[in-house]
Image (cartoon, rainbow, N blue to C red):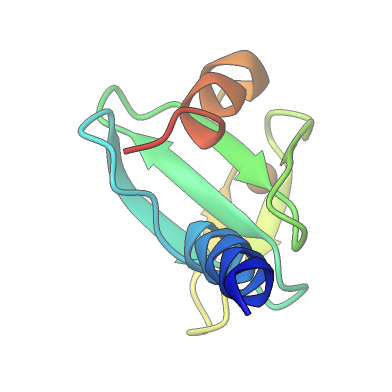
Length: 90
Ligand SMILES: [Cu+2]
């Protein structure tokens, strides 16, 4: 019973991180059509999170399709910065 609760809590945490990052370095997080997320930092640089919640690389200059139809051009590739945020509990 208790074990089941732990597993559910872990799943819901992962699910939440794929949509929004509650971190004061990130200004905006946008979901893309391919189910990944681009996080835009306050300095305008960006980092990619794949659909499994992992920080992944993307070439700067790559144009991304947001779910809302917006086109976003990749600025920077802040993989290390995002990874340090993704694995720190809020
Ligand atoms: Cu990107």
